[in-house]
Length: 413
Ligand SMILES: [Mg+2]
Image (cartoon, rainbow, N blue to C red; front, top):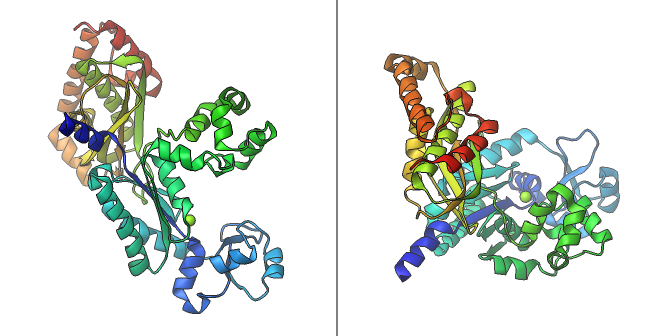
């Protein structure tokens, strides 16, 4: 049914925007002092003891200056450049404004350093056309409201979005909307152009005569042997596969708590999955209690047996116990077409500190009741799967996998 297909595309495919400010520190300085506009501007790295170039603007780059080079060398190459001591406090403050602007487009924003962020707009945009509109509007607003330029990539996962934003810098926009497009674009590029392949890894491959992304794809086993534990991740990246999830967090409190579980074989039993998700929620609730935090939203992500992903998220202010988180997680899960599942993950994000008024309210409401509800829910899971013992304390990151596998093989339905 064509209608069903388009709906699935809408839900399954992820739409990710990556925003990256162009020469960020230098842009802030040029904005604040327009006389710098047409001169080479060199901002000295604010965090380093040794004097190195942090960022330079495009006129400076044209002369051959680049970040990381010594200031002495930069001054020799460009004696009449404007050399400015970086002011990290100012860059942080501007960054907060940028994050605020970007977060108007989704709850699912993952900032990277001060000047970049991934935005999962799958649900807020709902279509590629609308996501494109978001991307151009973000670029326009950053220019008009913040007085700076940025480059934006639109992709079907994080690596394609990041690759897109790199492609046409500065003030660039580029989209990579399928694995095939990614592969076609990158095939002849050097391996070091793949985001997150570092110079040392690239060198290792280079030594073995593997220079391009296409070479990696054609020499998988050679590359895999050279790369050790990183092999699968790098091979996947060269194939345009990237399972990372945009993990939202509040800049004030960088924590979110995520747990996921990959089954040894596919699970097509909805109730089993619901029970495993409950245990994941118990684990997350334990962590929240340990750090005295409340969640601000719940995010469900997973993969079907064919590796295609699903995800859904919703704000859920003040959630903290396993029952609440599970209720939201299942409501989200129910918006996704149910098929055989290989991996399931839940994350609680936008954590905030539980303040004393909330604690008082809880003690009035009776945490005792919560605890007995939790215990009886666990008791029924224990019986259903013939587990010997199951208390909230038994469930943590290390045990959850074996408990879930036991459940998968002992389900009595
Ligand atoms: Mg940047």
